[in-house]
Image (cartoon, rainbow, N blue to C red; front, side, top):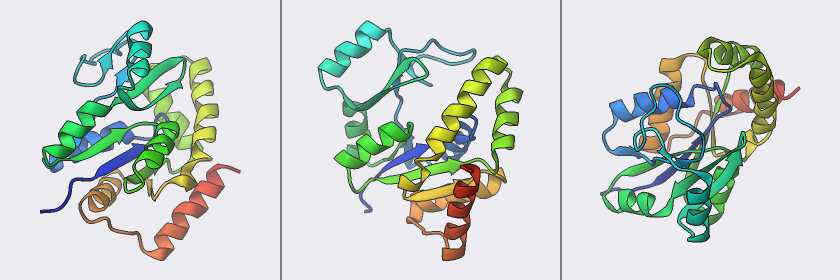
Length: 204
């Protein structure tokens, strides 16, 4: 049997990461998503224990003191962390485990688990990214501007990841993601070069 593996998936806000992960979980029952802890309040429709473990800052920092997290970081004024015990149990139960975290968390995980696979989701353009954030109708223009500035900073770390996936066509992006999870497939050289060229273009 194949050994269970740890995968890190990161993207700027609005990159489509959440939708891709949800579709992947429906497609492959051998994949399990680690549920992060966060101090941010639930958004409409989010359920505690399903989308996140929602805790207050006091409880979160106590878990940090107890070394309960594989990684943790402060993002947009709120804390996020990955439960060490939850990941261990899922791996031992034979699942490939996905971590939906940012580049800071990815860097921490890579240091502790060099064999993990890191995947970064790219938007086709910064203009498309802004359109996606606006269509969500969850944030003010001021917040969207802040997220766009943060996105440029996050994209600057894309080169640290093992794989880059361009989320232009959703079905193609999902197929790429599933191929990486199942086969560890490398993109053809020209596709890999295109992704890195796109990353450079986004950061102009």
